[in-house]
Length: 409
Image (tube, rainbow, N blue to C red; front, side):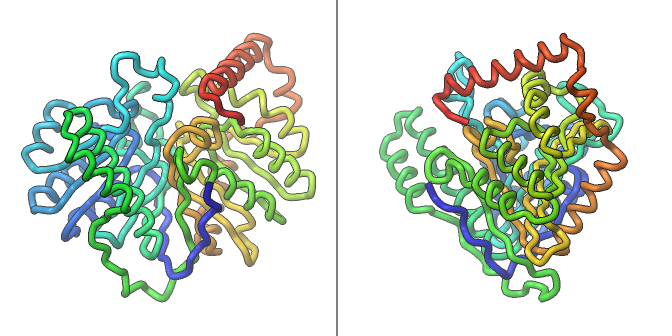
C-alpha cells in the first residue's frame, strides 16, 4: 500500500457547487476541446440538464475527437436506446464497469463499484468531485425534487491532471482487455493488458499559462483494491490528527470505522470544534439507519452533528483549520462509509490553500446554519424503540456485509 502522495505547488483549483454549475463548466470545456475527452461517472442519466453533457460529448466525437466514457454497472446498467444509437453514430466509445450479470449483487465481489466522478479534457484540465451526470432537481427513485441536492466538484489545472489521466487511461485499457477476453480475442487482450500495465496515456499538454493568482498546493487521492487500498482514509486520519481548531465534514453516507471514530472523538476531546453535516432525508434504508448507532459516542465526546434536510445531501467534502496557516480541504467521491473506504473505486482532490478552504467552509457553514437540523444528544437517546430497532438492524446488516467481503473496518 502506498502512502498518500505529497501535495504539489502550481495548481489552479476552482470549487464548483451543484450539478448545474458543474454541467456548464463541463460542457464549456468539452466544446473547447481539441483532441480528447475522457469521463468516468457512477450515474449517467439523460433527464433534464444532464442531457447537455451527453450532447456535448456527441458534438466532440462528431468533430473527430477521441471520446471515452466509463460508467458503473449498478449506477448506469444500460443506455437508453436513443442515446446508444446517437453515441454509436457520433463515435463516442462507451464502457460499463463490472456489469452485474445473472446473479447481480448476490455475489460479494460485485460490491466493488466504480464510484469516482472524473473527467480530463485535452490532458490539461481535470474535473473531480461527487457530482454524477444527473440533474440536480431530479432523482431516479424520488422524482422531481423541491430543491437541488447539495454536492461539490473541482476544476483543476496542474500536475494532478496527469495523475487523473493516467488512472483513467489505465482503467480504460483494463476494461478493453476484459472485453477482448470475453470475446475470446486473446492477442488483443494481451495488448490491452500491456497498455494498462505501462500506464499508457494520451498526449499530455502542459499548462504553462497558469494565472499567477490563485495558484495552490494540491494532490489526487485514489482508492482502489490494488495499490491504494486505504489512501483516502489515511489522508483523513492525518488531517484530523493534525487539526488544532476546527473540522467540518459533509458526508452523504456516514458510517466511519473504529479508527476514524476515535480520531474524531480525540479531536473533540482536545478542544477542536468538530462538526458533521450528514444526510437528514431518508434515501436508502441501509445508509440512513446504519449511521445512527454511531452518533452516541460522537455526541458524548462533544462532536456536533447536523442533519441536512433542505434536499438530498450528496457531498463528500471536508475542511480542517481553514483560517490557519496550514489549511486542508478535500472534495471528491468518497463517503466515510465501508463501501467507499473499503470496496469502491474513489477519487478525491486535496487542496492546501486558505482561499479555497475558506470558500468551502463558508458554504458548509451556511448549510449547517440555514438548511440543517442539529442532533440533540438528549433527544437522540430517547428516540422511539421502533427507530432504534431499524437502526440496529441496518447496522447489523452492514457488519454482516463486511464479514461476507472479508474486510475489517
